[in-house]
Structure formats: structure tokens, C-alpha cells
Image (tube, rainbow, N blue to C red; front, side, top):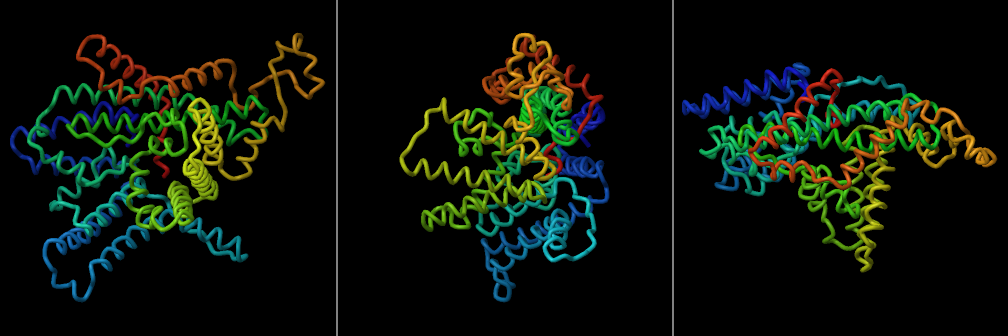
Length: 491
């Protein structure tokens, strides 16, 4: 089920909220949690019920392993003499990684094996279960924390709710048990909170507007440029690439806002996952702002366990690049994703080298350089293959021609001697001056405007705020006829 759909906005979400608080008012707390779990499982299986058993199996196995590991931290278990806890943890992690690897990377592995060895192994074309990357990482963190003795004792119903809570199930944020489960246990969170409802609606309205009005508008130009056009001139290449850069920004930001808004209705605060990343002054700052819970997970459960920078300077750089290599692979089974992650790893290593040398870069230089680097790597990320990426880059560099509007020919006709052509500037991306105006507007919003968190926190319960939220909701709903998936669903 999509957040940006009529059935979610006008039926599923209101009914789930109403029944949840009705059960809590009657002191049926366990029933309220069970209702949320059932609603979340319905939300997940609405997309494709075939993969519901996979989610349930993952929950059962990880709860059993996590509970066993947590028990060993409180008292010695009889099985420890035969099976050390470290081995149990390794088995649990292997189960999760194996599950993710089978569904997400089998075709990728077999295809590359065929190419490398000249084989003809058939590809099973396994459909990727929705959200498997997210609930796998979330549960690996739970197992590691249980092994470290950092988890409280939760019953099975609590654990099911921790994994399946629908606002964050599909595309994050990747949450910790310690920041989620205590919130469901607080007495004051069992009843409706009018301030939280107001904040939740504000977040949801801003997210819906970003997704339905902005991101989906930009998607046409990006799709035309990357997937349809055989060649792009200078203007077309920059229009298509910038359209995707801001489409992804507003799509992901919009999903995050809608997830936070839905959670607020239940008096639950999800961790901040998106904090104006295009305002970053360097690549390290970018990853502190973009998909923040993924960055946190990678630091705590991958980079630091590999040794971080504690085992020498060179090892620190290697660990950094390897971490980002795996970030790319996590996003998708394709060489463009791997290259994208590796480029960010190398960029992060260069930034660390620069910083360790005691060098500093003024913000007015660092910010545009960071955005340009991020923008160019998004081209690799979006392209279906390296050929398509090269097509866009050639256009951005003017290698496939510069075309100016025909109206400028009388004034700038001499530029024809330099190879400049006059005619339809945006033929392939189906853009025009309106596209440039929209790109300029959404860029200004991303670069200079306050983000959703700041806006939501400053809203006051008055008519002005109500009108603002209502206007965004109405505009968002009016654009639901163009319903599309959130981009991060495919990861």
C-alpha cells in the first residue's frame, strides 16, 4: 500500500488510528498492540501477500535468536557449553544476510558468473520482497545489541510491533528497539495527543506535497532523459540529471515526512532520517544528513566492528571505502550502484585526508563542490547501465552538441561557427522554460528553505497553520491521479 494513495489516506490510516486508541481507552493495551501488528502485516501484504510468510519467518527466527542471546547476558544458559553465544550471533547474522543475498543478489551473481566464465546458467529472476533490506538491517542490529547485553526484555508481541510498525516498515528509517519499544509502553502515549496529531498532520501534508506535486512532476524529465533519449544535448542532459537529483531528494524527503507524520498520530517519534542534505558543506556532512539512520547503522555495525580508524591510518581509509562499497551494493544488485557507493567511499577518503592534513575549505567553495559531486554520482546511481550514464555525462559536458532556442538565433547567430545549433532545446526531455523555472524553484527550496522538521516544530495551533496544512493536503490529494511508488521502495 502506498502512502500517496486514496485507500491509505482516507481509509487505512484513519481506521487504524481510531481502533488503536479505542482499544487503549478500554485498557486493552495488548489488544491495541496486536491491532497495530495485524494492521502493519496487512499493510505489508497488501502489495504482495506471497512475501508475508517471509517477513513472519524472519521475525520468528530473529526473536528466538535475540532472546537466546539476551538470556545469556543475564544468566548462564545450559546450551552455552556446546554452542558459544558468539556462534549463535554469527548464525543469526548469516541467516539474515543469506536471506537478503538470495532474494536480492542471486540473479546478479549468476549473471556475472555467466559473463566471466562463459556459462549459461539460467537466471531464476527472483522477485525482490518489499522492504527486505530494511527489516534485515533492523533485525541484525537487534541481534548484535542482544549479544552485547543492550536490549531490554520484550515479549513476542512487542518484537513483532518493533519490526512491522507500518510507518517505517517499507523504507525506513532503520530504528533501534531501544528508541521504539519504550514509547509504546509509556502510559501517556496510550491516549490521543492533540498536539502530536497536529504535528503529524503537518508532517504528512508536507511529505505528500513533496512526493505528489514536486517529485512526480520532475520524474517525467528524468525518465525521458535517462531511459528514452538516445542522445542528449547540453541543456537536455543538465535538465534530466538535475530533475533526478531533486526528484530523489523530494521523493525520499516526502516519504520520510509522511512516515514521521503517521507515527506522530500514534504518539511515536521516529528518529530523524533526513536533514537538508543538499545544504552539506562536505561529503561527510552530506552523509550525516542523508538517510541518517542508515549512516548510523553502517557506523555502528559495520565500520566500527571492522576496526574503524583504530588500526592505523591506511586501514581506516580501507574500511571507509569498503563500507561505502557495501552501501552501494545494499542499494541494488547492479554495477552502477556499486560504482556509486565506491565513488562516495573515495570521496569520503579524500575528505578525511584533506582534513587530517589540517587543510580547511571555505563553505562558499565546499558547498557547491559537494553538491556537484553528489549530483554527478546520482547520474551513475540512476542510470540503468554504464552506457546510459556515459550518455548523460557526455551531454553535460557538451560533447553531443549545444542547442539554443531558435528565438536567439538573430542575436547569437555567430555562435553557429563554434558548433552551437538553434532549434528545439528540450526536444528529448520534453521540457521547456517551465521546466527550468520549476528546477530553479525546487533547488532554491532545497538549498535555502527551512526543512520540514523546523517548519512542523514552529507551527502554532491557529488558523494560519491550519490553512497552510490544509492547502498542502488538498494540493497533494489533487495530484494522486499520478500515483507512483516511492523511489526507495526498490531498495
